[in-house]
Image (cartoon, rainbow, N blue to C red; front, side, top):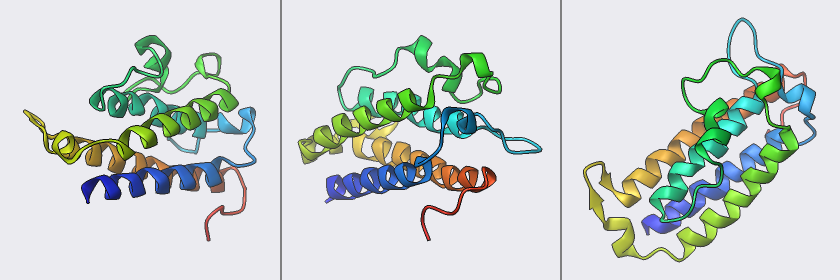
Length: 154
């Protein structure tokens, strides 16, 4: 049951981010909202960097090294243009992590999801990280509008 909910969350976030990133080029991905905020490049790069937590908790290797993820972690300085990864690489990394996570979740047992740690069960930790991703999926929709693009989800 919980596994099915987590899979639905993962698929919904993927759909939302995919639609909102559609048709956005690298230069556009670097536009920051005014008076403050992060660019779409940072937001989706942050999702990929955060998926390292989902991968680690699920017993898989990190997708980006700590160094590769550094410009996109929470609390990092405003993303400098020279530190930004090409947007198409970020989207490719997002797709790659989607496939890894989806396959892992589909094969995860109830006992694995119920395994407890000092931070709650694995299922609870995964649910929190997917909530975090959904938050940023919503930001992607707003950032698309900042770029003057029509809404991707109506």
